[in-house]
Image (cartoon, rainbow, N blue to C red; front, top):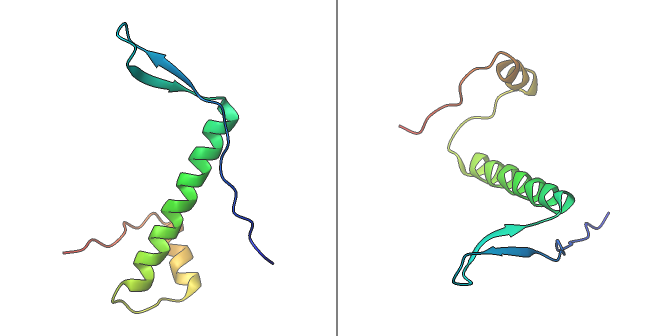
Length: 78
């Protein structure tokens, strides 16, 4: 199945100061949610890439799931 890449399209509005300098952006909530979803996906991709590059031994899925459910802290890079 081919993944279709889409750009988020919107018509933003700017909040400007007395001198006309843009200070904020106003977006429809559905566009904001799309941006948050895209950022979340990007974070997942970066975490996956980091895990693939890490010099560590794989663990069984059941153990990983158990550690996640038990709230075990993630290992630190020391």
